Length: 248
Length: 308
Image (cartoon, one colour):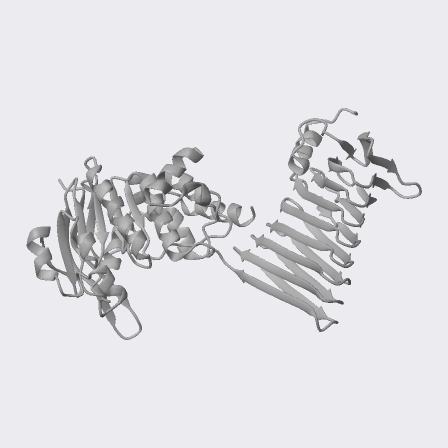
């Protein structure tokens, strides 16, 4: 049995005249204890796939199984409680909710300040400076992103889904991020991680790579098999190249 | 001190975080009568003559002392107007905790109108905390109409934290302030209404002296069928800085009218206002739900944070 199974999952959005299919008939199984990277060109349906797993969107067709149980009709909350964690591509800002509050909600218990600080240290934030800060626009994009990842660490879910964790963060943070994922992978303890990403360095630490194109699984296999076919395409971008197209 | 009953004690906890007799100077008013009072060497509390209320005189340069003057009402149909005057001496630095809790289980309206006037001396610093709370399920309304007047001398500093989170059916809050040169006023108002409640909060701040400044910020939540009006006016009559902000969440069928007003009577006056009203952002709810909260729990967390 796999930790997550998508069976013939499709998702389309309809407007007045037509329906647009974003995810088409996706069959995908995620085994226990693996780090899976999902890549592919922009608009290929990657983020939608992540939202379907978290329950933020519901499939128009097909079914999703988590640890053998059909969760297709289960709410976001139920899926979270069952053990699915989700890190947003664009971290959400709040008014008045502090970093400590968010980590406590994520952990589902009253974390001590010392415990909360540990999660922040793991994502490279000097904890004492952040613990009482509000999760609002006074924090930079990179800081918000790292806090977002810390909340997922605090949840300790069996399945963690990261939607483009590298989006909007600086190079220094990005290097840190790779270390965080490497540590998560090494300490997975049977759980699995799905990372939606274009970044070659993230693909490089994955056990398996899934390529999503036009809403379909275009290819899937071990890193060694898939990565060489992606180098030089938009599915595997070098971080510095992305910042500066000329690579300077 | 006169023994308070269980309801009065609970109200006292809600409005003043008091479990027992506070440190420092205090006057506790319960069901329209004084239930206990203490003056200290530097802070003298006396009753007014002619009208109901207190005179609180704080000696110049009194430091790190506090005054508690909570009011609790647990009697249906009691209506009172109370005039309290605070004279804060030059250079003093004090905390004043007021607040009113009404429990009305009866059918008649209970009402407390507190008129507080602050005369803040040169260079003095006052932190004023006022909490209003209502409980009881009688048909009689719980009504609070506080009037706060602040007269600030040169270089004084007033911080006012005014909170009304629960159970007050009808409220008209009026706050007036006049600031001399270099004086600074910070107001943080937190308001939540629910059911059929109605709340009006009016501010009139006059920045009269050079270098004076005011920052009036209200955060509010209107739920159920409640209605709120926030009407804040700052007048800049000298080179000064003024800022007013109303940030509100509406839920259910709640309604809010925000009327930020600025009046510049001096070319060197710098005045700003901001107002934003909207429902809870969907992505905030979704985020907290992905952390395992139900939608209702997520709403509570968002509101608690917002009104912190």
